[in-house]
Length: 340
Image (cartoon, rainbow, N blue to C red; front, side, top):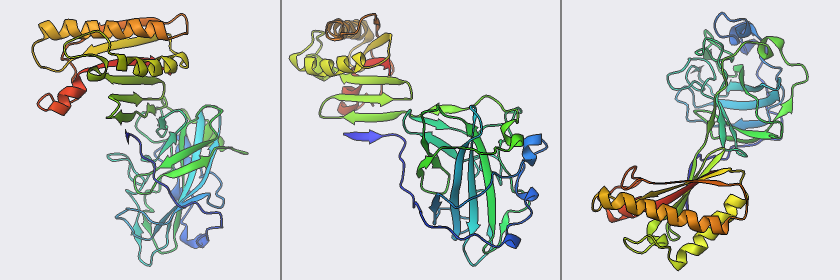
């Protein structure tokens, strides 16, 4: 089975204390925080402690000796989570830190390219923005990008808060391996200027994971709240037929069991063909095949109250290259979609 999707790479987790640079090398606290003229931009960084996770090496072109520390991931409120980080120059040469944590095309000298991953619900949390919907609700170190040897910058960035049952999240940055299983803790004394700042609508994105079982003739995509199962028509039906084969029953029993355990109230069943022939034949065939799958699932699913939406699309919406045998095989399919 081949699994494609969000890939999380292990990082170095430290239990020992990471040495802190001298205070003189850290720069003025006010100049290391803030972003624009909003009130929240003048908030200081959340209180720093010993790092709970560290990446000693990075792909950053700005300095080969940069160290990235995670200090805390704290709930400031039911709606806001704040990540505290630090960048330290452990090299012997000055580093210019402007792009390391910035989103491509985003704001320089900010951590607006950092995101959080909820592995339990397959969702990516993006940094909150202020009400102008452009400015990151995070610290900025504009004017202090030149980080001398031993120098360090404290950083904070606010995110939407995940559900209460989420006890840890992974932290992604543009230049380090992902930091796995960072604990979510309650802030003892949240900075009111950060917590109370007016922000735009949160951005929480579904992560779609794709699994392809070539031998079994099935594939699936999973997002945060929805599953789509793709069944090969070559497994379900004989050539140009819409009656289910004996082999189809084992596959559909597994699908029915998953539907029984899901929260779905509606199951969508869609039939597709390759582009061989024409849609005067292909569309009715795809409709009949989808109807056959619906009929069998109604017999196999034990949960009551489910509705079914069935459609045939002929050769529309190909997922493979119709110029190849392998691509046409992928396009001959029935998909079953339902809420988790």
